[in-house]
Amino acid sequence: MKWYKVTQKEINHLFQQGYQFSPEDIKELRADMRVGVQNFIRRWDTLQKERERVSRLYHYERELYKKGLSLIAGVDEAGRGPLAGPVVAGAVILPCECFIPGLNDSKKIGESKRYHLAAEIKKKAVAWAVGAVGAHDIDKLNILEATRLAMIRAVKNLTVWPEYLLTDAVFLREISLSQTVIIKGDAKCASIAAASILAKCHRDNLMKIYDQRFPGYGFARHKGYPTPEHFTYLMHHGETIIHRKTFKGVVQGDAKDHG
Image 1 (cartoon, rainbow, N blue to C red):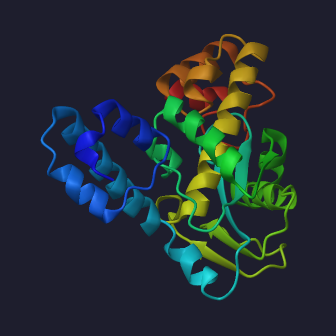
Image 2: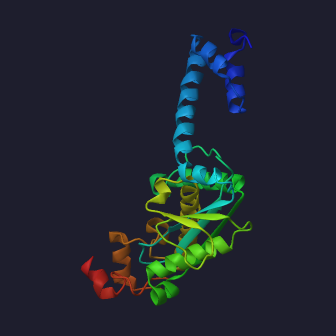
Image 3: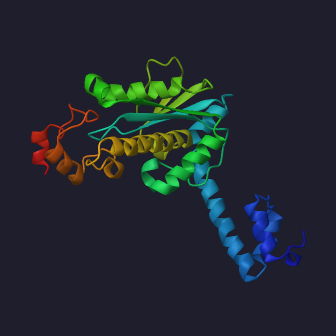
């Protein structure tokens, strides 16, 4: 294609529609000094860098693809640290080398972008699911075992059974599948990052519901985490049924210490 004959608006439209520009196309467009074309080239370069970054997140999956596996589920949790609310896990099977711009550890992503990514993940995933364990069971089991149970529930809720699991820091001994445990996997592995985003968004939605059920605690803002605001509400109102009674800070006396 003779790109100098194509308008800047048409080039941008092709880019937005996902047109596959060849290396020769890009070389020609780099030499085109029209302002709009050079703006396009900057966006193109940014996109390629993002593709390379996301591609690096598929390191663990890629090793499994080489072994003939394709149904690889990433599993992660959200909500181990809060004083209130459930611990939630996500499980996601992504298509091979699926490119989702912005995919990253949920803790590194702002709320609005996180929800946008969650929608993209659900749209593109082979299968996805969440699992949760509430405060009562967290108190009975301890947070590590409750986290494990939430992860198991997420995996069992998948509509497509995986061939392999990639988990963030927790081995799921009750699941009879080969699995790799990755410390800080949400920052290193695409499937786990996707699972962390779904878990975080689902838990945040639950805490917004609890905010309406228990007004005056600020759950929609602090999501149950041990913030000064949360400790103040605990001192004034006491604990709710969604508070983890075995966690330091929930007992009113402990809350006063943090006030």
